[in-house]
Each structure stands twice: as C-alpha cells, then as structure tokens.
Length: 419
Ligand code: LLP
Image (cartoon, rainbow, N blue to C red):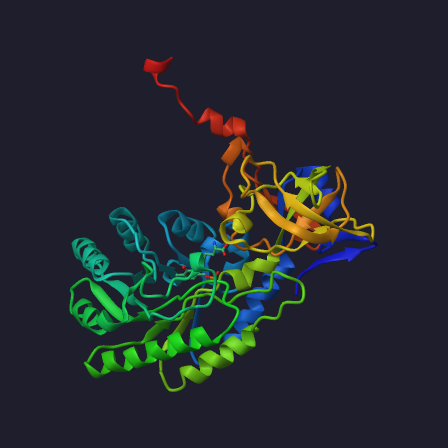
C-alpha cells in the first residue's frame, strides 16, 4: 500500500499534486511519501514483534537519503551500512552508533578504524582475514569489536543472478562448511567479541522457502558452534524480502515472513537482527518523468522520456519491471516502448508494453522506485544527478538537489601540461 493516488484524475503524493512538483523542481525527479515510508517501517516492525528480541537495521544502500534515514531513525531503526560513506550518513541522521551494523566484503583498514572509533554496534565479518585485521586495529586502539560471522549458506535465492548472494560461488560470507572452525578461531582472538552469525542470500525474493532453508542451515551451525563452547547470542537474518513491481503480483507479506522466522527460530534464544531495505523503501517513491517526444517506430512507437538509465538503473541492469503511469491519464491506452535519451540500447524501461496513452510534454511516473533508485543514479552522458523530494501531507521539500553538469564540470581539472 502506498500514498500515491489519483484525486480528480491527477496523481498525487499524499496531498500534493505531482504536476506542482514538476513545475517547481523539474523532471526527472524522485518523489517520496513520508506516510508510505512510516507505514512500511511500522508494518515490518510490528510483524516481527512476534519474536522475543528484535533489532532492525535498515539497509541504507536501498535509499540513503538523509531525510529518509531521519524518518526511519525516529521509527526506531538502526542501519546496515556497507561503506564509510553510509556509516557517516546514518550517524548524521541521528542513528545511534550502537544501532549500526557494518557489512560488506571489502571494508578497508581506514573504514574499520573509523567504525571502531565511532563505536558502531556490530561488524558483520565476511572473512577470517577481515576478522584478523579488525582484531589488530581494535587491539591497537584498546577496544573490543562486537562481531558476527557472515556465513554463505549455499542456498539458491531464486532471484535475479546479479542480486543473488547466498550461493557458494558468490563472494559473500565464509563457506558454510568452514564457518564453525573460523568462528572458533575468531572467538579466541583478542580484540574481537564474537556474538553470532549473519546471512543474506539475495534481494527481491518472491518466495520464503529459500530463506527458510538458509535460516534452518544457520540454526544447525549455531548449535554446532554452541556445542563447541562458544556463545551465539545474535543472528542477523539480513534482508531480501521482495515487493511487487507489477500491479497484481502477489508477494509474501511481512507477517508471513515473521511467522516463518518465528517457526524456524523457536527456542533459539537469540536476538534476531534484520536488514530490510526494499520492503521498507520500495513503495515509498516514484520517479517522475516528462515525455520528451513520441517517435514513430517500425513496430510500437517509442515514448522517449526525460528520465534515463542513469536515473533509474534497474531496468537496464536487471531487466527490472517498473509500472509506468501517466500523471493525468486520459483514459486511453497504447502499446509502446519506453526509453530514455541515453545513447545506448540498454536505456530501455519497457518494450511493447500497454501503457496510458501519453504525448509530448505529458508527465508520468515509474512506480516502486523508492529502493535502489536515486541511490544508484549517476551522471552518465553528462546528465544532471537526479533530485529528490519528500512529501508529508500537504508539505513538501527538496531533500536532494539536482546536481547540474556545470557543478560536476567545475570539479574537473585540466593539468597544466595539457593546457
Ligand atoms: N543486507 C545485505 C548484506 C545486503 O547485501 C542487502 C542488499 C540488504 C541487506 C538489503 O536487501 P533488501 O532487503 O533490500 O533486498 N540494486 C539491486 C539490489 C541489490 C541488493 C544488495 N544487497 C536492485 O536494484 O534490485
């Protein structure tokens, strides 16, 4: 459920008519609904309240906008971060350092040291090598790092290959069969306090059974580690719960997910940690765009919009579907190909799709663009970096400026020997 609805034939974000924002800020433009964000944060949190002890760490990568993080901080979310940059954002948004977990296979020496200095709550170690490096830094600083070991459960998440992370051939975590031994070694390494296990098998999962299979395997490992005398008090179940991108698609609900976790973890006696991203932010945003022109084709017409793969990369990268809807639909539909202005064929949002009839100058949105949208934007083809707006009832504000090509050009230098 979201708060992007038609009122008198005009698409609104909460109480704001989208053409108002297009007038004021221009297009392309991400528009977030605060009420939708809050609602999703609460639904997920409330669903998981069936578990005895829960900690929520929002996957910042899905939408790192400062205003978004502020809203989630107020809802009691910590943060799952994967870079020093994300960590600084979470801290800047007022998230408590001890509510931050740091994931990622390539945390650098500098990032590990900064995270220790900031007092972040948990390091999700992705290798023994990383654990040993962190131990050295922590010891030198006179600190102890709270850690969990990320395990690769070798389970097929059944999602797009590029966003699968839990198969043995993926770079993430330590191999399942070696995890107990690595855990035992790290647990006796000064500077580290090993407190549990983590996993994340992939994103945009449409079914719960791969998650259930992976969580069950983690339970077996947890028991083995405990039997060998080491404590396991925390399990970080990662993120991955998918959302419907196509009107009519049916996905597992947060309550279904929570019920599955409760069933699998019955009697585990752990703090259950979660790193939801898309399920919180996906529906929270749309990408608004204006039709530049409609160009005749051999087959269906090309609807050329002013948004492109640099603004919303998901269709180009993962063949992802985003529903497309006119802001002021006239009732008719057409079959069309929707493309951006970038000079490569991957700049295609949809081929041969039945959409609201649109013409030059019309506004439209790509829906469900709140997760992995603006965060993955870039300036390819020397296009501006796409701005973001947040709506809250009848208020709205620009929460990220459009960064103009001139600003980027101004950061470039021609060396003296070329001048
Ligand atoms: N935790 C870890 C360790 C992750 O790697 C991820 C996502 C998450 C949590 C959050 O997953 P979520 O709940 O959002 O599924 N750019 C891709 C998605 C990449 C996901 C990367 N990891 C896309 O646009 O579909």
